[in-house]
Image 1 (cartoon, rainbow, N blue to C red):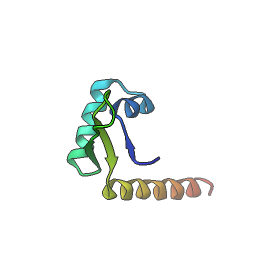
Image 2: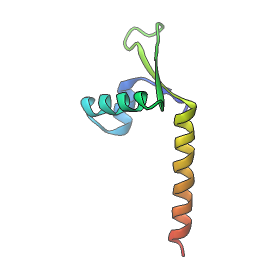
Image 3: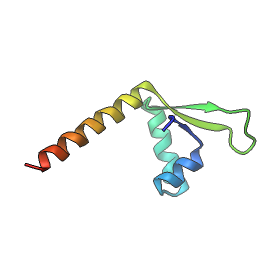
Length: 75
């Protein structure tokens, strides 16, 4: 919701195993939808993934498409 999280929390929320999660996160970073930030406050995990403006725009686009499809499904 806040656009930032640890890789393991993303993995559990997506109900994926570690390797597919890593591949997907790497791909999203390469495409500019996420960026990696290093966190020095937490000892357990230094990586945090932050959604970029491009990533937020993509989510908005899919939310709009989902609404349109659900409306059209009623007719």
